Length: 278
Image (cartoon, rainbow, N blue to C red):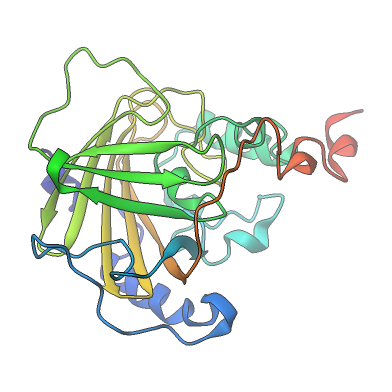
């Protein structure tokens, strides 16, 4: 594991301050505008925090607010306003910044998500309609199940294994996890360049290495922090975060994107033609 070096990598804001600000701003984003439920998070038989529902209940996680970066150049800039770090403060390479701007200039018309491609990294946590984080102790694995995209899932190996040396790049890559107190730390490499790692259209390459940190301070709230280390697109590692909210009683549903694409307008929406034609 190489997670320790990432805890001291480049970040535009102190992560503790980020968390405090996001916790304050997230209160108004819970389901039905109720106050955040401060009951303690459930725990598994091993004593670790569980990201699953309390026994006998149901629910899913959704992103409450925020993107990875504030991007005034976004075609929907208002939706990025709650991010903890500005795009000008991340160590993005010039070609990657230009590509990000181009993607927004054409209203994300090249978006893999609307073409039913699996989401990777932070995007798998940001996707709409909800997700579940499930622990299977007998297999020493955890799973992140998504409703959206191709209704895909990620495997997190919790048995202490290392990343394979002959890893073939894939949409989700290869993830290994461990606990640091009540924080689940996930180390992922081996992602291909066929999907976007973020809702913001930020590019990544097959050199991408992620350290994700999941905490659940209360029943209703989970905090997601990610450190992005991709020498192909950035000049240094950088860190961002957002808050997820618990949707009590929600259930996963079948979403076969190829048969029932819920975002066809994103493939060619209003105003887009005027931006991509002379």
